[in-house]
Image: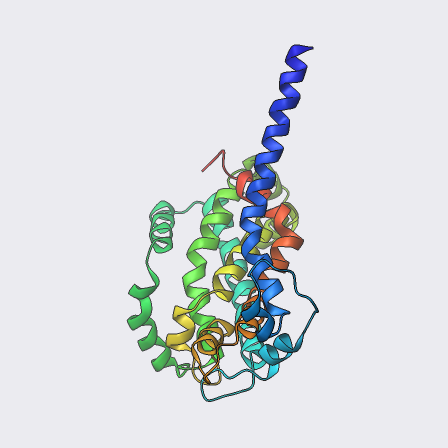
Length: 287
């Protein structure tokens, strides 16, 4: 009985600690949400932690369609859709390429395959700043400077190293016997990939979708360097909005804009977060 009592107390303390940690990390989000639905007068007169006396969504409307981001006062809407047009194809293409690369490196060994894999791993640790000049030269030669298509290409090239690493480490946990049996039955490269590998790949696909989407959507450096006036992503617009001054700092508009910019990644984690940990740990025992 004493051991059971100690066990219950221990679990209670763990849950209490987890709740305190959750509240600590959620406090900034609470401040952002409550500030975004307050008027400026209420913000100035009250406390950051005060609940709004009355919900006011004008800041959200202005952040979306009326706030000034430099000389333009169209809000975040056009830049939000720029980010969508950039992130969706970049995520899908880099994930698909990484899947095929990982499949090859895990189950279709060739001479020098380990060297290729090592080179790709090195690519994961190259800082963004190192690739700016060569990438700018490449985009200029291809006629893609200051375009959304150019940003898509940049993120595909930079993301393939990560997606290949994830998929390769996941696919080495798939038994070689499955692939060999399919070969004996006459299945070729793409038939094995389609019929054997893909049905097992949902967790790691979700890992790459979440990872790539988060990296691409939240990127600022590539967006500000390679994005032209009509192709800037939402992160660049958010920075311009916060730093554009008309004499009064509109904290409610800034908070609403920050939440709008973060909503897609937050929503993706909430919808597919359970697959993220499952996919990361699935390939942890091999490779």
